[in-house]
Every structure is written in C-alpha cells, then in structure tokens.
Amino acid sequence: MIRFKWEPGRSRAFLIVVSIIGALGLPLPAITFEALLQEMADRDGLATFPEPRYESLQASSYNRRSTARDQPDQGTGGWFADSDGTGFIRSEMINGREEWVVMEHTGPGALTRFWTPFFYYGFTNRTGPKIRIYLDGSTTPVIDQNFIELLTNLDWSVDEYGRKPGPQNTMSIPAPFAGFTARAGVLHLPIPFALSCKVTMTDRPFYNIINYRAYPPGTPVTTFTTADLSSPTLATVGAALTSPANYSGGTRHRSAAPVPAGGEISLTLASGATAVRHLEINLDAAAVQAEPSILRSLVLSATFDGEQTIWCPVGDFFSSSNRLNNLETLTRESVADDGRFICRWIMPYETNGSVRLLNLGSAPLAADLTVRTDAWTWDARSMHFHANWRPDDVVPGTPFQDWNFIDIEGKGVFVGDSWTVLNLTTGWWGEGDEKIYVDDEYDVARFPAHFGTGTEDYYGWAGGVNPTRSDEFFNPWESNVQVGSTNSNSTQGFNINTRTRVLSAIPFDKRLVFDMEASAGTGQRNDWNLLMYSSSVFWYARPGASSNRPPLPAKAAQAITSIEELQARSDLIKAGGENAH
Image (cartoon, rainbow, N blue to C red; front, side, top):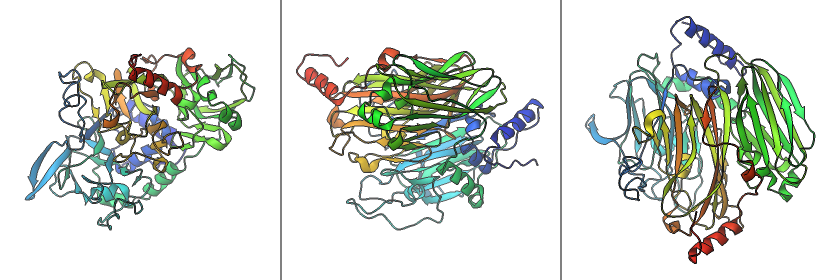
C-alpha cells in the first residue's frame, strides 16, 4: 500500500503524484477519513478539478410542497413554501424502533457537513433526538449520539430560554470541526462510506441540513469507524484551519503607489505556469472610515491566461461592502482597525497573469497591493479562480422570487459566496432557501441538488428570534459578519454573511445556477417592505467558462445604497407613487 503523509505546503507534490498515478492507469488511493481531513486544509486541491469527480448533494428538511421550479403554486403553499423544519424521507422500523430517515444514499460517498438549530420544536427544548448513522448496510449505527450536542458541543451559555442540558454523548468532536455558531451547531467532520449510508433521527426531525458527496461506482472508499477519531491528523488539520498560515515565500510583487482617480495600479506576474498564493491589500483605515464608498469604488480585478476572471469591489470581496469589518475564514481575512485585507485563495495560471486595483472614485487613493506567486504544475485539471459581483438590487416583500447570485457556464467548482442585505426594519429578513442547480437540473429536472431551509441556515446559524450583534461569529467556513448597522442593535441596516466550501464544494461539468429565495419574515411581506441585496460569488473553472455577472464599473462607481435612500423609496411605494422595480 502506498501511503501519503500530509504536511503544510506539500499539497502540490501530492497532486502531482496523484496525476501521475492517473496517467499511468493505476488505481487511485482510497478515499479515507485521513485523506478527507487533509483535503479540508488543502487550498491547492480546490484549484484542481476533483478526481474522482464526485457529486455534491444535500439532504434537508425543506418543505416537500416545493416540487418544481415552474410548479403552478408559486406562493407559500408551493415553490416558496415555508415551514422547512418538517420534511423527511420516511419513517421506518429499525431493530424494533421507529426512526425517521433524513438522508440515504447507495454507493460510495462521504458525509461532509451537518447543521441544526440548538432547539427542537421550541426554545425550551434544547435536547431533541439522537442522530443515528448507518454505513454499508449495517443495522448497528456507527454514530448514535444526541444530534444537538454532537454539533454544538453544548458550547452556549445560560440564557432567557432555559439552561442547556447536561452532557449525554459518548463522543465529542473538537473545534473547529464542531461547535456552536448562533443558536445552531455545525459539524464539518468527514464520514466516508464504501457501499451505502442512511441517517436517521430517533424522533420526528426538526430543521436539519446534511451535505454529502457521491462518488462514482467502484471508487475505493475506506468506511469510517469511531477509531478514526483518535487520528493525530484531526488536531494537525484543526490547527491549520483555525489559524491558516499566510504564504510568505515565492516571488513578491508589490505596488505601493497611489491609485489615481479613474485610474489603476497593476502588477504583471511571473510568466509560465504559476499560482498566486497570497494577495494583500492595505488601505488607510481612517480614510475608509471617513469615506466608506471607497470600499465599493475600489475594484479588484485579475486576468489569467488572457481571461478576466476577477472583477469585484474590494469591500464586497472581503464582506465589507458598507464599512470595514473584521473577518477570518480559511480563505479571506480582513482587519478593520488597520485596513488590511488578505486573500488566501490559490489562483493558478498556465502562461501569464496580472492583478489590478481600479479606482472608480473621484479622488486618488492610497493603497498598497502585494501578491506572492510560486510555481504551479498546470495540467488538464487545473482551474482559474473567479470572483464575480452582483450590484445593489432592491426587492419588495411581495411577490416572492428566486434572487440569482450567478449562472455559470463551463466546467468548474463552486467554492463560496458573500451576501449583503440592507434591511429597513428591526425584523427578520432571511426566510428564503438556497436553491443550487448543477448541469441539467435547472432546465430538465427543474429541481435543485441543494434545496435549503432558510438563509441563516445556509450560512451556518439559526433564527427563532431577531438577531443582535451578539450573534456575529466566524469560523473557517461560515461567518455572520455583520448584524445591522444602526444604533438599535438589531437587524436594521446592513447584514452580511459569507460561506466558504471545501469538502462541500460543488463540481459542475457545464452549468451551475445559484438562487436564493427573496423571502423575508412574515412581518415584512408588503410591497413597501424593501430589502436591498448585493452579492459576491467565488468559483474555479477550466479556461473558457463564463457567467452572467460581467464587470459593471458604472454601478461600482456609485456608493452603496443607504438606509435613508431605501426608506424614501419605501415611503413612496407605500403612498402609491412608485413600483418597487
């Protein structure tokens, strides 16, 4: 047996070895718990189309009254049905007990992500059911634990809804692989299986989301056992995820010249097969705080191998569209106090590349742009990094609609997004579900591979009450970056969420469509209850891919929509003077 040892900075060598094995027609190494753990910290791997090519799928408690994108009922009783916490596949008797099946798959695969709120059909019930995971047809579950405790590690304090329950489980998954976010828990523990998987609950399921991979038939997979949890790789990868290292080697490219009004600064990168491994932008924090519109009018752009693949305002790229925010995920970091932005996405190219900062504002801007590059072995699986922006779009509380983040054509992998919502009220803005279609699903199946249970659920936290700033958090994959921007300590103002996908990244061969339901809470469903949305999307693709999000310099030159502007428009609609569009 050939064994591969993962070490930071060694991922390119591993990929080269795997490519050689594939080229020689030799069998690929088995998918194992350790290999999947290593993949979680391998940013190089995200820039390489997966081999074996897996399907990224999702099981959730979405409302089963939603059946097809063009079903006759397009209201809350059909395609936009609420009450997403009651759906399941079926109940059945297992070992003489009734259990509710929430996910099942026949064939090799791996569970990659679980989410659930920290309450069960009411805030006073913090216990809920057990989750049971049956692998490879066994009638003995490999995991038989309390679901809420498994995901949250009971990592929340006493509050007005009652004390948390005492520990019940026989296993505990360490951070960052499991932990409390905001009224919810998320588990990022890979659980591979060779033949099949069935996930059940010991009582009627409540809100839940399970992401998993389906590998092609015959893919060698080593099935998970609880003994895997003693692997030292768990701690090694956990440390790499919690404190991701910034690349300091390779060739440094830098420009510290002011960016002229209406002009740009540009870095021409090393020629030949190369990858950007570190991108850093430093701005004058005081200047940005005095004039936040800089975050929208300063645009990050990059061209690789003759294709412009990045065009996104700096603020939107770093989840700081309206002000400087603190953020630290596996791939992006921002430090509000000193105006520093760091991007850790790997960006390969075959022959040539350039990175630019465009100043669409009316005054010169002090900016320091640094890029570090190093060698990359470009092959038939290498992909370019893309970042696209959809500008401010005002949406009424009724009728509901699917708000499109992006529609991509080509072959690639969807790896993340950031969403900004401007909310006029202190109420709830995010009832809508994500809907992600892969390849033929949008036009043929008319139903997505990923159908969620609510906007905040998609980003790893939970509602139940109107959020406050105490609900802001970040981990390597998900972040509730900002809750409101007014003095009310509520959702009023700007709300920003972001998500990075690694094991739950979504490969596509020809098309990916990402929609989010524009559906606020029940108290904001009049045509004058306006919400303003903008988004950024991060993806990799083979050369030649395209999307419906072209550069929009005129839009970026405008300051982000203010709450005063949105309120004036709402008042006009309420008075009967303007259509929301």
